[in-house]
Length: 390
Ligand code: SF4
Image (cartoon, rainbow, N blue to C red; front, side, top):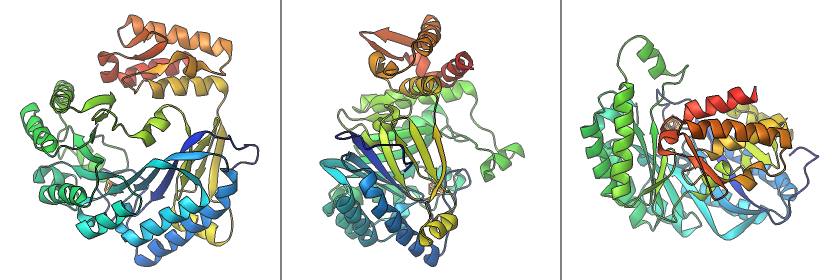
């Protein structure tokens, strides 16, 4: 952690641990994840353990109310290794009793005994990368699991004691019509998950799917269909008691992902592992992204931090507004502008009022948030905020 940041006594924060390995690289994925052999995977855990110990004193006095093991595929590791690491985190940091402790899992990498071990030893939320319950979709996405594996993983997690399960879905794949998508969603909500994350498939430059699309190998749904898919998503999920609380996230009341809420509300967080970012009172710093470089740094007792930045107050304010507008409930204006220079606040107010006139943003009772149209046109709203800033 940069030296000029003093511990913020009593504040709660999120703790993220990154596991950058997968059994196979999916052709649409641009996350920091890759395939690696057992030696690199073992060394990575040792490196993580070496990063944890010195970080403890820096975060003294901070209560972590969420822990998130994400990736990559954390469940490539044995449940014992994952639980040992969680124990180390508990011994090193102050983790609130009742903290939300999430693990991401690929359906092909879990079984009931392993999941039971995780749920009995501190993990109380699981996020399953099911992505689709259609085998053609899963083949297109290059996933290593079938729809049957996805269903089995969900039932295994329930049987193992998880009472808070997220299902990740991808919409807007080639061939997704509103009818087909409705059917997929109905089969998903029949499982009664507490939470569904549903992202539109995006083709990121540098990925295999992007190349294939450039070559004309497949067509993505047009804009009108994409809008209809989103409408169907909200309709089916809300009918099943899952309320939309963020652009791409739906939850049963009280089951919103607390870890991600902390990001969207601009809270503090500590990220451990390759490429993980941390944030403390406006300072941000990120670790070197490549696992071998991360391992080498920790093994030679060097800092894994590769980049650090302190955002100017005005940029920080606009960024906070853009992230806050992802939340259906919006953000409290007073929280949003706290500590920001007056001139920047005035510019932001002007920009948001212009968005409100176009029906993208609402103001109410000291809150500002996105209208349903604003949620759909979020990128446009963000772009206009950026223009106002530049
Ligand atoms: S499993 Fe997830 S993190 Fe791994 S390659 Fe596929 S999409 Fe990326």
